[in-house]
Each structure stands twice: as structure tokens, then as C-alpha cells.
Image (cartoon, rainbow, N blue to C red; front, side, top):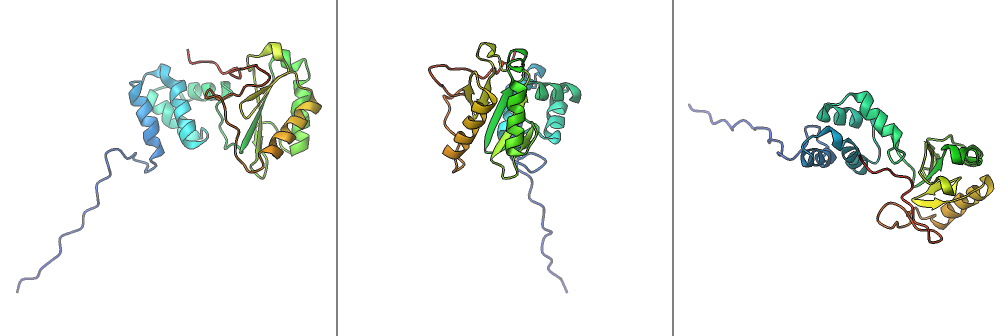
Length: 205
């Protein structure tokens, strides 16, 4: 007596465009890597893509990028921590960057940071418990003539004091209580008082 057996089920092959990790966001990074032919000098562009896809640069992402570009992890980490527009931790709905360059530092930038830390009970590099505000510092934003300088959600605030900076942040959070960030001019910055700045973001060399 013959016994009919059902054919063994086979696992469906993974789509060719799907990353081995199963996370489709990696495909965005892979696309940028291929666009630049895995050239090592495309590191900043690749990190930009990774951060846009994941929101921040985790250790796993840095390792992945280093492996794909055949660069030392220490080099990739150094670039990610040097430029202020990269972040290694999840960010809040709003972001405040305080310049700590020499010109800003001598004009009380450290006091501005201290005031923000005290007001929101966080240290530089952290996000408030409610996830609304992240405060960070940058080595230099490239706007020394406007010192001391803050960048609040892409808007350059010039010649601030600890008191005025704190009031600016309070007002900004109150105006955007719904969680939406203000629109920028397409370059990640906003214009204020007729002054347009790139926030000291250095273009890849």
C-alpha cells in the first residue's frame, strides 16, 4: 500500500534586498556604501545615512560601518565623536547644543551649560526623563564672532547669557509642547534676525 506524503516545506528564501540581520534599515546603509564603492573617504556620508536611518549611532552600527569600510573601529569612533552632528545616544524631541570653543568658553559658555543642567536635571550628553530635551556640547560650532553660541533645534542663538539661554529654551519647549520640531531651511538650520548659519557643520573633506 502506497502512502502519500506531503512534500517537505521549505523555508522561504530571504529576499535579495533584505539585510542578513532582518532589519531593513541596514539596506539604506548598504545602498550608500555601494554608491560610494565602499571608499573609506565616504565615512562621514555613510555615518550620516546610518544616523538618519536609526536615529543615533549605536556601537553595533559603528562596528558594522568599520567592517564594511575596512577601517579601524577607533577611527570610526573618533570621527563619530568629533563632529557635533553625530550622536551615540538616542536623542530627545528637541536638541540644544552649546559651543565650548575658546571664544564661547571665555564668554561664559560653561555657565550656560551649568544653568541648563540644573534646570533640567541632566548632564551634557543626556536627555531628560520625559524625552523632550537633549543637551550636548560641541568643541566648536565655527561661529566665534557670535560667541557664546547655542544651536537649538537647528536655530543659531548668538551672544547668549546663562539667563537668556535658559529663557530661550523654556520658551522654545513651551511653543512646541506638541512635540513637533520647527522647520529648517533645508540645510538643517534656521534663520534668525537675518543671520543664516550652518551651525559650524564642516563639510566632508
